Length: 199
Image (cartoon, rainbow, N blue to C red; front, side, top):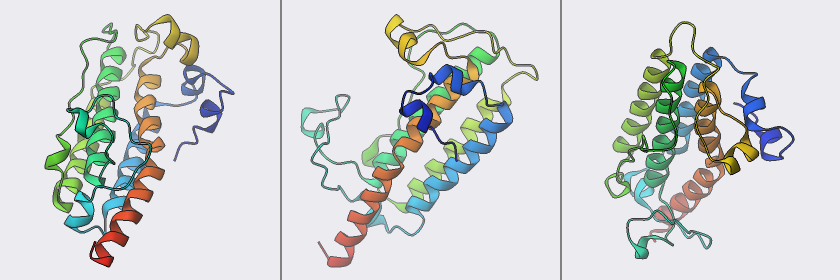
């Protein structure tokens, strides 16, 4: 799995970090990350997938309602969220790789409604579907992808991350996904304990 530590510690800009990776690396890391997502839910019951954990710092400004803004995210919700973000990054990357300019709008994102992600079967299906979608976007890269074209972003974004080409944009989705791993582990722990205790 990729160590994004140098980027997180701001030792290197994301764009410079991304230059060390190839399209083959993106494919391998996609398979590795979706395999890791599967481990978080592999032994979960339906009740554990749907369990809403205690999260005192929950604050989702994009929640559908104000009531949902401060509730913890279930395992199903996390699966829906990280897969949607990774797919959006992959979609943008495939445009850039083919020489198609892209800025920030429209958003190329669709997130499966988290309230539908209440069973083990749905969580596993979503993970496998996301793996297929992301690999499909990589298949859309030309044999010689355009790595000169960068995503149009705000000056503030560029100052922080640098100018992201296709590989950099794809990697940003993976970084976001990996950044949620600890949350997956904590939610899985709470869900397991709650179900076992009959709560």
